Image (tube, rainbow, N blue to C red; front, side, top):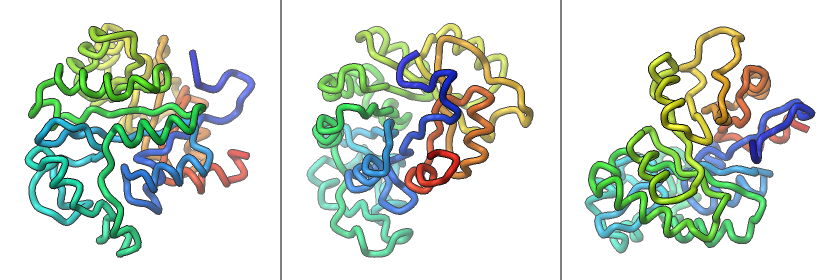
Length: 253
């Protein structure tokens, strides 16, 4: 198992969920850089694909929530997307008005200066459906090639995970929609390096998470005590939008 705690470590590794999204626009370079400066060893970002086939960092299919613009990512070219503010004015005010939606290529270039950092690249369902799974997977693999072992392609879509496996020896993560016996069977068949789950979908007990060759990634958690509780159940990595506050807490020092 690589890049996860061993038995001598009493706390999980924290993942910057969409960067440092508690205080910065999500999925933006400014927010990702803030997460890195706060000590993130892992970053998680979302990948949508523009009308002209360019992977960008964006969570929603629609532009409205974070940019205030109408329409979808898939209906806009990269040039059109580049004119939009990703500053999340409604949530963060006008502080980040000049922030733009970054391309995946821009993120890769940034991370080349952070050799100890790995990145989870979530392939979003809407773009997979619109552009086709093979095309999206191929594009993301090629653009992220400079990161080599530091990239992990993740998705809810099992066909996308299988396509990643077919296209090369690349780490993968499967995001669970449900924590149940059917998902466990699928996980064993799919063979991802990581299983990723919203912690609220887990049974409300202290029982260990499913054992396997995978590492567990749990989200969205901002409570350090909850993070340590989940770590004891097998949650190797914890995704948080408040990575600075989590790292500064005495339980993580």
